[in-house]
Length: 334
Image: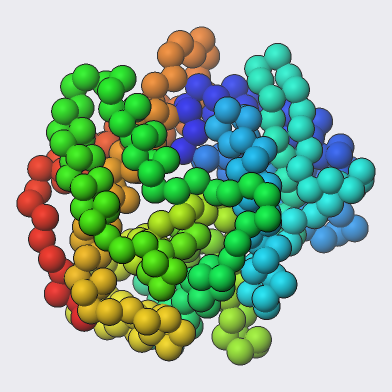
């Protein structure tokens, strides 16, 4: 989630997107806002084929981190892992930069993913198994990935980020205490290549596209959050819509996902028992990003959607804040 002030300024008009899309070939009149969250994303067409323009402020996403992201995608594709493809600009670049009075933007364009999004309410056990196998395939390739130039950030960078955010909010002592507990626990974990590497960190249903006619494969988008972390965290964040659900059917679906994962990667029961702790980390990191997003200063004019979005973020932050006071408990998923 980007700073709400930047979001308001960024979607006030399509001027920045219109300027950036000029770097690529496109069909006039097809550019339209798709979403604004951690980035601005616009859909457009070229020769009636859909593509996506993604851009953000340089202070939010450095060009070095984007280069590292694209290198990982290229590596995955070379090894047969299905994902969206970065598209070269007219000048042959994968990243284009635009300087404006508000700041510098970095932009990339991706192909659209083939397939359909699946729904958490209707997904089948077989599809869950394929989903888990897809994530394991990514982790299997991550074990041997060595970046040539730039390197993505690691969990240690997120700890420093969270600490800097919480120190700007003196009232968030509970969050600082939670950060200390989480950090000490993470430091105790092994970091060998069988359990630790570059993860997707947003392998949820809205970022995977199912192709039933191609051996039930998934096409993956949005590698913007890739980070060096424990593979178990990727499983926890992927299953976010299911883990907190006590419904027996949800537990069956989770088991199907884990069965699929274990068909490609080892996953010890001890690692599964640590899922709640990884969830604590994910919740804390999410909380810190919401706090930073809400620290937007003065906004002279706010659009109609602003009050609703701000209210939602405040409610989520309050819920997360309360969760930090709960004792750590182990889950019974095996």
